[in-house]
Length: 449
Image (cartoon, rainbow, N blue to C red; front, side, top):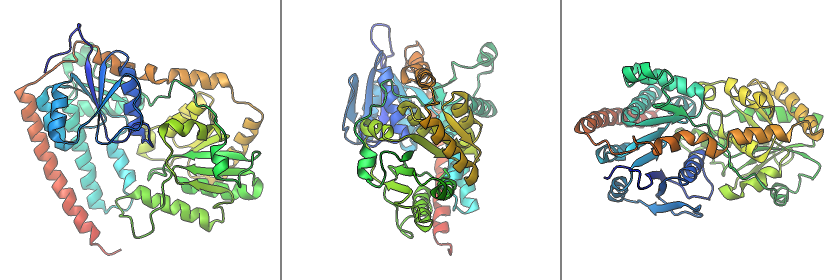
């Protein structure tokens, strides 16, 4: 593989496992938007395992269904930008000598703790250890690491130091270590969300033009707290029935007994539908739109709402991860009510974007929603505050550290036998831990309920 040079743009490879432009996860959106920023100064190829429904200008899109296809792409590029190296392609990446930008925007080991609440304790311990070891393996092969917040960066710096992956001499000369790990928050699109009709109210004719419409956007994830929100909506149903809540893009609930306990998000979704039904709220005060909305169509749905809402419990995942749906509310100019921890509080209150509520308190949440309604109706939220926050978090601004690395002289091949040898050892250890997890899962499935 040729190294990047001054007479040609750096060639950046971005794998993506979902259709561009269709209903997209936060991971897919992050990859797409950062790729679009890099395409201003680099030659960017997005390697897909499925077809794209819409390809932005400046991006080349190829399909890489086989390992051989992916190896050829590695050989033809200088930098791999990835949100995680797959174990089955790990050795191919290391052998290729391609430079690796590793995006650790979510601490997966903490997410694992919340994502499998019904996992037997021993299995959860094995899964956690397996995730930690694989994180360290990826760190050891990364040339540049990015994460989503300063709190995460402190976490990862401590992890790198404890694992012996900090170069002591370099760290002494650069106490901030920005050349090793920097922050790239989840960003917002440069173009503002545009209102286009009333797509939510047209789908839900029970919601009138004068009703105050709260929006929960996207799936109901295992580490979120919809139960407290429904408790608040039960209180509001008596106090102010004009306040309506829409869960948008949840997907269809999976019937009880059809989903494995390994899919806690499906279980949380089913529980939320059932709780809304049992409280007498469904299709009266609380509505579900199960359809996943394409990425490019979301703006019209957001702009049909009056405010956004996101409720998170107190957890390690919430402590270190903001929640990408808050950025969607910012992009759409929606004042918001948010529960969670300091990261959520600082985002909402620090920029005057809405109201923060401590978690697990339905009465406090109901009071905050009533206050938000009054503030929105009185136009107390400043367009300038939202515009300033959007400007600071626009993708071309937040993605600058990735672009800086890709344009640097370090974005070139670093093939070495030692690097491959280390990777082989890491793969062997990870394979052993994976076998232990599979055995534990098979055992757990046979436990009495």
